[in-house]
Image (tube, rainbow, N blue to C red; front, top):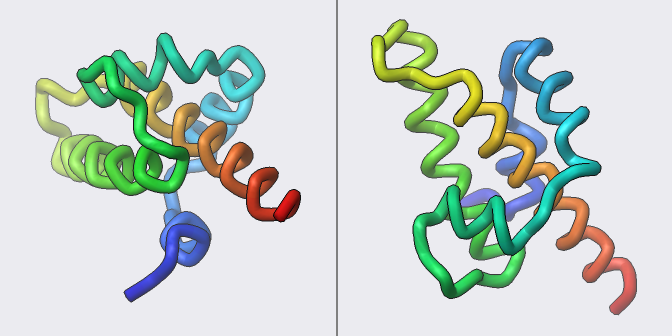
Length: 97
């Protein structure tokens, strides 16, 4: 089983999605965005949030690949932004230990 870092390292998405997400990381607001993405008021720690969002992102990516009509590129970018921002938070917490 891969750890979170390994899972994130193995994520491969189109450059346009990744670039768009990188632009959004600076404006990420954990309380607002994570609540909207996960659909609950209780916010998990960064590691748990990442694992939940990876499942959401994988579903979105599958929708993208099969060109499902319900696919939302905006939602996909929003989830990627949150994953990137939470990963930065997790890395910073790991380094400070």
